[in-house]
Image (cartoon, rainbow, N blue to C red):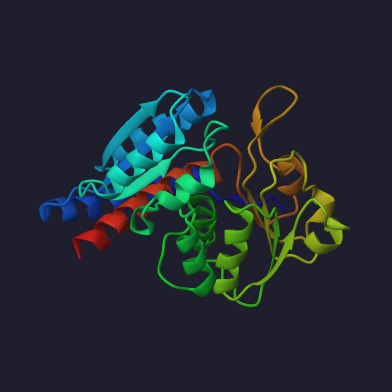
Length: 283
């Protein structure tokens, strides 16, 4: 059996069309959803991400503002900018691109963003809302993974999901979202012993550690659904994920490719969160 691909590019396109339609409806009421993206320093990867986020906004009819600052910007100045954006009614979502220069406390900056504009879903209030099942903003990458499972009509009730990775950005929120859909969830990480024994029991596996070939074909139960969140380079310098794609696709029922899988969904869910922030503000 060869797994069916869950195409992140195609699903993103569909969701972005929906975003554009909803944005148009808001504009008719005199509200243009606005996202402010703040970049401090000149990290090349961050510059690419930021460019892609701004372009995606514009393509979907959202208003976006890109603020670029030198790496020497002080923490106090950055906090003051965040506060100004919190008070700007034309801005519904604020995203401070990570990583920040070493002299700036990233957590302090994230906590300075108003929870009502925390479209990245990293604020402690957003984490608490997810934990307790209250309305809030979900972190974009795991939210995108949930949309991918939804797109194949996958019912998580009673299924065993294994999440490999425990980061605050993907692993932990992913586990909570799966729990909300009544899956039984195991979180594995670098200290987990005998990962293979766990993954062989899994109906759904989410690999999110940033390490090549952390999941190979012999670790996957036939018919499992595999979501690959990893972003790595192989020996030829080509983009690849955490999963040995060629091997695993012969065992799994569904799999996400890298590139073209979870990646495009992350930016799309940022647009969805920004739109929802604008809808909430307009109500």
